[in-house]
Length: 166
Image 1 (cartoon, helix red, strand yellow):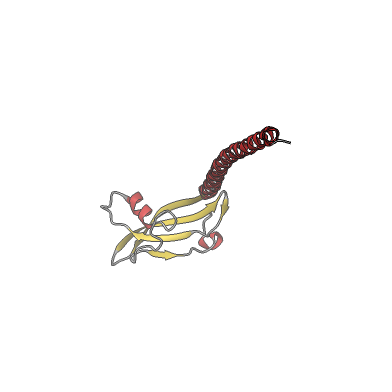
Image 2 (cartoon, rainbow, N blue to C red):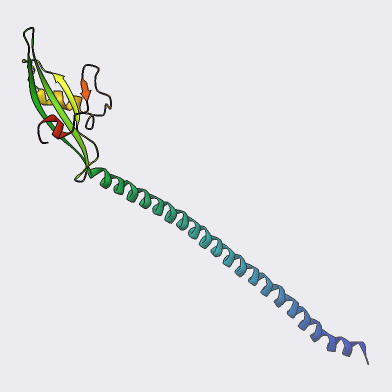
């Protein structure tokens, strides 16, 4: 066999092998590009999913807090204070003293939570705002929990012992 014939026989084999290697490397590069794009889209989807998860958790937490706050507000609206007051005059030989007696009771719906709390306040004749005086001395309605030093606070006797019906 002659060398030219041998080259002509091997030349198509080398061209086919070279074409196969070239197409293999081109397809490998295309697959890597496609894989990179898929990884990028997967990373974006994961980031979006994580951000939605965080947002959803914050919304759930805010909704729970708002629900708790509303429930507490509704519960606190059920409390009320019943007030009543009357005037008492103590006349003696030495002096005449006029006092306003303020009585308060705390209720939850229509259930009394406390006994009547009684405040005795000395009232002068020239005080025009007796109602304002009563609100200032209230134990349940005022932000100040402890009354002034001048007020006399005492727990009243049960209604039968006091001689009148509440």
